[in-house]
Each structure stands twice: as structure tokens, then as C-alpha cells.
Length: 173
Length: 235
Image (cartoon, rainbow over all chains, first blue to last red; front, side, top):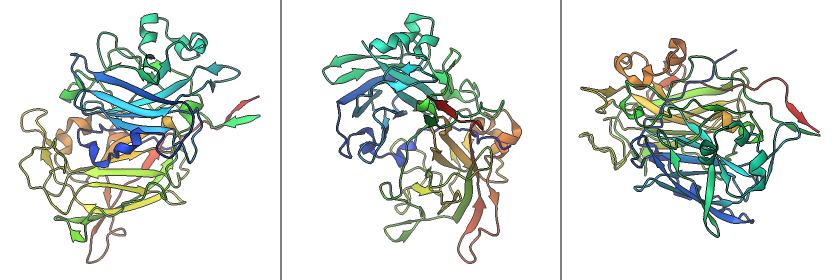
């Protein structure tokens, strides 16, 4: 059996492959509940991370010609990312479990030798209480690092902290 | 009954770098201090985006821009994308970016005092074929200083990004060149604990890929995580 290729940092110059339109998952004409996902990325000193690539992937709504279900966005000079996408619904889990609506996130940056993966959940979703991944996190304060809060009718915000106080829960998959 | 893609196998010990790698200074304030949460792989992790060449057009020759040749040593890179069970991964997107022959990125953040090449941008994209093979043409990138420590120089390298068939298979990495004396001094390369895994990041010179009177050829293969044999079934 072979062994999977090692990761190396994406570095500070990955923008050479950037296509800013990838941050809009509705650009191919997807219909559904359009939402904005935004937030900042900060490091262990509280400084804004301004050179990261943030990727999202969601399995609800299902990917189609009209909806790539995948997006990529840089963090800008203010450490902010912003995606336009469709609001996910519940997702089947293992066995008969049901997962709360969520979006998978991968963070790449200079200083990260491999991606950090996490998930974004939505405030006030009843299924959050029984979600099989959220339920693995005993500390309620840590669980909250994954829950985006609604800041306007269509915009949800989740700030990501790579290190230190309120450090985001990252996952090994 | 719905059959979902099988979960990926665990990552082999020592085969991946740790984000907490003190010799690479930028990791200091960016690596998480809490251990990662191990989660079961659901459809979110076992599936991933699909990119088609018709919508995301290939850019397989980085050595020419607007019909003009870039400066430097023209090379062809060819290889195969397979999973850990040696099954080819067909029609998968491969993104490529790199510095020019002088060791300078066409990027506003790169202030290294080396010339920009007006005929070289350094971004590309190819797809593997039905049998997992990919190929592109470029210019051999130069080494460059990077201030990680006194007199620090990155070895010649090409950046790659691959998606494979699932979110859990995503890989972003760098390809190095054989015989580069800077490898032994490079904290990024040395961050991979297992020596064999590290050395697999080094391309090999290949006379069969080399094109006579035109370009040197290098071989570089990718291995993406394999899946467990039994798919998950859900009633």
C-alpha cells in the first residue's frame, strides 16, 4: 500500500491561482435561500491573518451544475472572508443520525503546514443540540466556536481563532 | 438503500507535518494549541467538489504568455495521481503556482530584489486524464530568500493543490527538484517527520519525459488518501 503525499504550506503567494468569483457559490444561477457567510481569522496574538485561503464545502443543497457547493475566498487586509452561498439544510449522518445544517471549512495559510479543518453551524438550529459532531465537544464554550451568529437577515458571522483564547475547535478527519 | 462513499483510512504516522513546527517561524502564532477533535467521517468528509475542464479551463503551459516565451529553463512535469491502493484518480483538477526563473513571484507581496518576467505569471491548472496522468510545461523556478532565519533560502519548488474525490482527500503541497542542496536546510521540507515521505516530495529527472531539443522532463506522482474497503450503507 502507498502512503498519501505529504502536505506543505500554501504559502503567502497562493493568490496566483485565485479566482475571486469562487467566493460566490450562487454565480452559476443557483436558486434557494441565499445567505452570506463572513468572519475574520486571527492568530495567537490577536493579529488579523490577511493572507489565508478559506475554503468551504457543503453537502446540502447538493452540488449541481448550478451550485458548485464549494467556494474559496482570501482573507483580505482586514482578515475578513465573505462567501455568498445557499443555506444548507439537515444532512444525513452515520447510521440513522441526522446532522444539523453545517458547512465544512478548510483553512490554508503561510505558517500552516497543512490545512486546518473545521465546521460552521448556524445559531438557533434545533438540530444543533443533537448533532453528532457538536455533541463530541463537552465544553459549551468550545462548542460555541463553531456556531455562526446571525448578524442580519441573510448574513451569518463566524470568527476563526487559530490559537489561544477562544481557539476554534479544529478537526481531524 | 443509499450507498455512500467509504471513509478515508487514517493518516499514516509521520507522513504529514505538524502545524507546530518551531523551526518554521510563521507557525508560532498560527498553530492550534488544542488537540484536534477526531470526528467520524460523514458524507461531508467523504465527498467533495467536482471541477470540469469545460467550466474550469486548463492552463497547461506556463512557459508562454501572450505568445512570448518566458525566461529560464523550460521543463515538462508529468506524473500520475493515484490513491493509496494505487487506483488512478481520473479527471481531477490540479492547480499549480510558482516563482519565475529568477526566484520572484508575480505577486505584490513578493519584494525580493529579483526581476519580474513580463512573460511569466506562474499560475496554471491541469486535469488528470482517464488513467490519472497529468502533464504541464513551465520554467524551472528559482530559489529565493525568505527571512525565516539568517540567510534562509527556499529550495526550488512548485506549489500544487489537488482535490481528489472527497473533502478528506484534499492536499496542498510543494514539489522539489533532485539534488538541491537547500533541501537539507529548509524547515518547510524538513517538517515532514518521515524521511521516505519527505523524499517523495522530490521529483525525479526523467529522460523519457524530456523532449529533445526542447525541454527537460521531470516525473512527480501524487498519492491521495485511500478509502476503506467497505462502503457505508444506510437504510
